[in-house]
Length: 310
Length: 270
Ligand SMILES: Cc1cc2nc3c(=O)[nH]c(=O)nc-3n(C[C@H](O)[C@H](O)[C@H](O)COP(=O)(O)OP(=O)(O)OC[C@H]3O[C@@H](n4cnc5c(N)ncnc54)[C@H](O)[C@@H]3O)c2cc1C
Image 1 (tube, chains in turn yellow, red):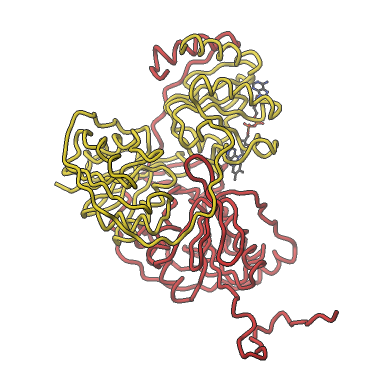
Image 2 (spheres, rainbow over the protein chains, first blue to last red):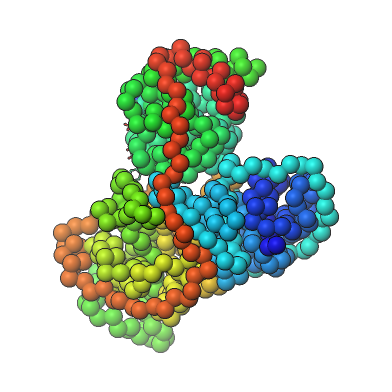
């Protein structure tokens, strides 16, 4: 069987739960799965040793994993990773890394995989308007879309090997600018509540923030909101020219559901739409649609959620 | 003060008294552009392939930011900008669009065959190195495949640095770019040679003027032939996504209460 090599997805210096999904996907591609944990402190790799289906954990330890540097990370990870099918997450940073590792190994990369059937992988094309099925032959690098594959359980155990990895830095971080808000970014969140032009003013986004804080959600926006109001930064934009997100729950408020907005969120597991226009296209994609103004619906939604979650 | 006037079409390096050429810092910039279906278009399948025959083709949205950044780089540092695409005759339009807003040269790598990422990046990186470019701009991903593999992949093949998802650039000694990281943004220094994959940022993409459009019409596309390697990833089929079952729709704001119940009891997500 084919060897698989997973690059663990990291979040705040720890192995992120997405990694279990990568193992789930890797087990569909081959056996003998080595999990590489890029880290500055190898103890974080211990947690990953109980993911079932992993044969071996390699803690790739280096100070260069403090800040992302595509060239150096690819060099360091390539040097510690055995040959095989390499699996990463399809987060923005990991897709970038996946492409570099593939080019370094002189193999191809298949990004954003949403299903695996033997040697056939499926990926969304044209922003999810169609699906492409490709067949792979030999080693490739595969990035896996989060929130699609079932995660492996945490009832295994395996050896952890620590290897000092090295690479040549090609960039230097001059400054890190922290986000003003402590809320998650849309690209990191499992629940997103987004507002569109129908919110009427940027101040009204505070109604979305209250609900986001109840849910531990991120606040997103349509392009019309970002373009109309300077207070709404582009980092919040979801869609074709914003971020592609796949949360468990996406709540669209005062968003019509233009094709370019759908491009960024249609693969969300559950979609709730609040719109006063019963014919808004967003309702065709919503699992639960509420035909109402947000002024009426959001207070009810907020109360019901805080009653349920308190 | 008298200004030294340089005729626009003399590209001769003048020597200053110490003997070094004025204009040695001129940067040779390439920007990779790709033609994709207009994002408004409906995608249809015929047989087991997407049928683009009746779809309007445009420059991929993030490539527009790449072209703009390449032009800003040239304006800040001096140099030339060459737009490069891969495709058949029909792809010339995307090059002319780039020409109309100010790129100097337009080059098409003539190939209509499918190439997987490895074959594609090899073709691009060979041209970049043969023709001596020092900086390459591209979009962070194209609107058709959405992969985002080209920028970092080409950089790796060239042995260059790369920065991706870049929203802002300062053209200092080398480049200072802004790119998102966990929890915020990083401001990163990188020196050339480098591949920069561009996201939408605060810059506005310039619009062509009449003169630009006329120039673009007359401009010659330099066509280069390429000989790609065999692909190891092949397309089996393309299809429509599975239809999502129709959702439930409720009237009135009070129904938000019901939806919250459903999110817990039916969807099991909160
Ligand atoms: C190349 C390109 C790229 C693009 N990229 C993106 C992108 O990345 N992301 C994106 O979002 N768009 C993108 N767009 C723009 C997109 O086409 C739409 O214009 C945009 O999504 C519309 O945003 P909206 O739904 O907020 O506004 P509108 O379409 O104006 O919709 C507002 C909605 O709010 C509803 N409403 C009004 N008042 C209320 C109320 N009180 N309560 C409840 N509902 C109310 C209305 O019924 C309406 O449905 C792109 C377009 C192009 C051409």
